[in-house]
Image (cartoon, rainbow, N blue to C red; front, side):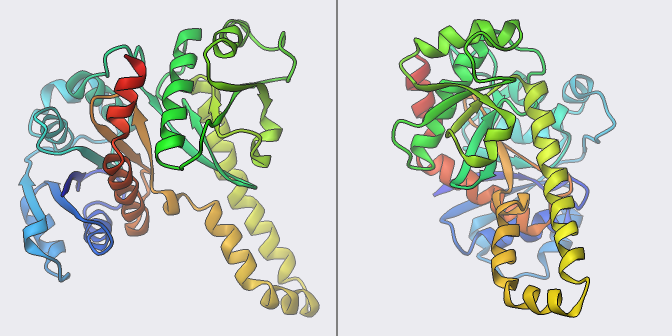
Length: 328
């Protein structure tokens, strides 16, 4: 049975939505959950659910790391916080994954300092699935390393390829370097130096990919530094929300449009689900000795359930061990 730690105190909707999502995940996965946080509020939330008691354990933690705190200082001083306790459980191999919707900075800092990097990995990366016409592409880094070196991008490509092969079942995944043009000589110094490394890596590297081609699904793994990746991620989130609002406005503008909207309701519902972050749940922090999944700060129960599902799939298919083997 896979043991997954849940930061029950992290995120805008903690602990209610976190606990609800965690409990809901038990029905479809053979997992045990360690709920980390203050005992009383977690127990109060659990009283409203029927669940197998032997598969849920509360780990009482007296402290919580808030989003406004300095990540490094909080990790060093709040030893009994839900995040730090969770990282130590990973380090002690009492859990194989942790899911948190809490402070991104504290999550990345604590994971790197306490859990540690896989030997050979210079920088772990946040890997975010981006929806496209064919399914999804994995983009890394999406925010952990705003400054990067060419070799980091090469390692991101290797780790992303392992993920797509193991989790998505894609053989020999296509790798693209996000750039301002498709020509080999385009881009800043980082892109120009990373290109030949990727080209000679043995990976299925297809060259540079422009941002406008990402929604078409031209490749399976998208590589960039965390600054570029986070800008793309936030733009896609905002654009998707605005696009569906504009579509809704037009479809309710007159009677004919309303009739068409009613007939197309299921199609639009499926399309919207493809852009819903709660369907995926979170972004894995790849390159660590154990799995860390960062859920959105505003995650509801559905998103937490998705993040747990992703963690269970990742752990069950031994992705960390496969990345270790690849990087060695």
